[in-house]
Image (cartoon, rainbow, N blue to C red; front, side, top):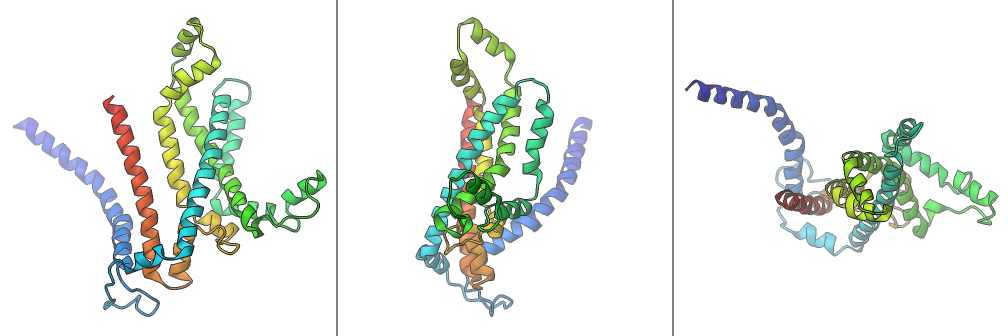
Length: 299
């Protein structure tokens, strides 16, 4: 009896500790998500936003956005941007992690300096790169002109074929330290005895990498890729500050298009529908990740 009472008391105490977090999640995350889904099923404009008698139109907003060429371009741009950033961030982050996991003088201070780019606010990074890619006195054009690689200044963010590249470079500069930190942690958790045993068996560096490092880092790699995908796929501030979705929708992504529909064109229902498509994409990625992790744990 006493043990049962003690267990019930401890259980209730645990519920009391997590209750504030649950309330916070319901109010600031749960309610906006549900409200956004309701708006996406209604005809909500600037004139009907504050009214209670809004018309229920079902999936008409979703039909409208899927029939919109700009939405399809925004979806493709989001995928191109995300995949491009992930390839650069993960590749260079992995190389940096493999380098800094080795113990040498000034390894930690240099690694700390690299992390500064990740700690800076994204809006600051976006402004810095916007000035760097500027056509007039941008440092990128200045360097390329001095090296005689270009004959005249290039409007990197003013052309559709280079604006997306500029965004990918800017975001990769932010994401590389994040990938490096997580992968370095995973590398440090691999016992040195495994590598020593492999060396005794005659394994070379490439064999150690593909037979030991990569398999033992599988869960860390999955986490890095999924987190990187989520953080990159939902990008808004970097794109909004650097290009605003331009030129001529060349860098329009789902988040900026949802913002434009809602707060510039005042089509709140369609803007909410675009946001929900973004939410569904991220939710599916999270489900795949959880399923993969559960399989690994069962094995």
